[in-house]
Every structure is written in C-alpha cells, then in structure tokens.
Amino acid sequence: MGRRILTEVGSILGITIVLALVGLSIVTAGDAAAPGDIVPNAARFLFGATGIAIGLWTLLLIAGSVALRHRPVGVRIGVHLLTAVVAVGVNTGLLALVAGPADSGWSGLIIAIALGAGAVLLVAAIIAVLVTELLIVSPRRRSR
Image (cartoon, rainbow, N blue to C red; front, side, top):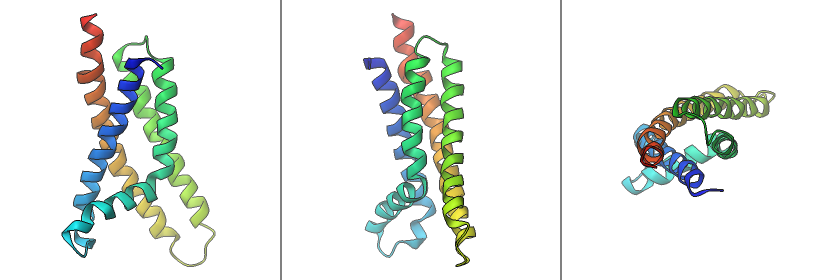
C-alpha cells in the first residue's frame, strides 16, 4: 500500500477510535467506580459492542482507499461513510441474531447497547472521515 493510503486509513481509524473513546467515556462516566476506571470501561464498551464493526470497517476502508485513490474527495467521503453505516448495521444485525433467540430477556438490552455504541462510532467516523479527507489527505494532493 502506498503512503497516502496508509495515512488515510490510519488517520481515519485512529481519529475514530479516539473520538469514540472520548464520547463513550462521557456516556459511561457514571458507571465507573473510580475515576481511573472511566477510559477502560469505555474501551471495553467500544470494542465489546462494536468490535465486529471496527474490524469490518477497517477492511472496507482499506479496499475503498485502494479502489478510490484516483477519485474526487466527495466520492471517497461518501463511500467511507457508507461503509461505516454498513459495518455498524452488520455488527448490530449479528448481535441481534446471536442475542435474539435467547429467552433470558436480555436480547433487547444487548441490541440497544449495540445501537448506542454504533451511534457513537458513526458520529466519530463522520468527524474522522471529514477531517482526514479534507484536512490531512487532500491538502497534500492539491500541493502536488
């Protein structure tokens, strides 16, 4: 992979994960027993509830970055955001499929947690894709 593709994918994922951790830290701060537990709880929540989405989106980001390397910025932004929505949808669907047949009564809560964490991940992904494509990757492209 080229340096631009690595920069694009790495910065999108890095910014997304940091922003999602900050957002989930704010959301889950009330559940922490001690102040030092806030970020670890948010990380468990993020990677536990949206781990499938993050992994799938990573693969889709790499494929999209390679396939769209010569396309305009707007197309890359649209495809990256669409793949984020697809990854969160697949994540939620798989968790619903696994939790749905259980008679324990927890399936609704598991799906709600996945939707909440997915929403935080999508907001972080939108910000990360826009920042990366408009401020990090595109200025280099224009200067060439």
